[in-house]
Image (cartoon, rainbow, N blue to C red; front, side, top):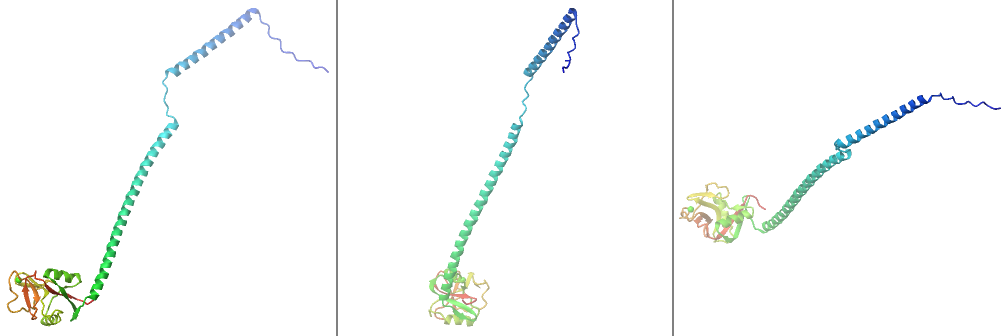
Length: 247
Ligand SMILES: [Ca+2]
């Protein structure tokens, strides 16, 4: 079975004059379009070249700037922190050195106390009326005698009454020798005990002593008798120390 093929419509027949007119219109349209396109391209090209390129900061550069500032601040903070840590370390080292020095001093002090304890135990103390007395057997001037008594945690003897004086004089290891006691008249004629700077109420002077003038300002128990004599403080004699408690 054959189908009848549908033929395309027959183009409208135009005459030669219309054909020429159509061709001219098409040609004019192409020219016009081409001119417009060319003008548009020239315009764009000219404007793009003549207009200054706006340097837009790329987002990457902005990020780099922010990151750089951040890094700079972080670095400064790090340096400050590092310096602070170094300062703290220095202070710790100073404290450690001070503690070491203090420890050494404590160790030395402890050893000194142990040595002093041994000396005190070896020292012969004479007990009387609740107090203890030490007779110094090395010859010293009054000032050194006073110092020696303090070094053994005592003081140069203060004698309050006749009985105490008699007892101390009677128990001297070196009988017949002079012994310094803690009595001076640095202000002439006013005798005071070194222990508490109190004025001496009880006084027992050998005849002719006790007012020997400005060159005799320190008192001692006389070598032969029990009363006292005032003498040159630089004279070297034995001495008596006293302590309010016994070791
Ligand atoms: Ca005097």
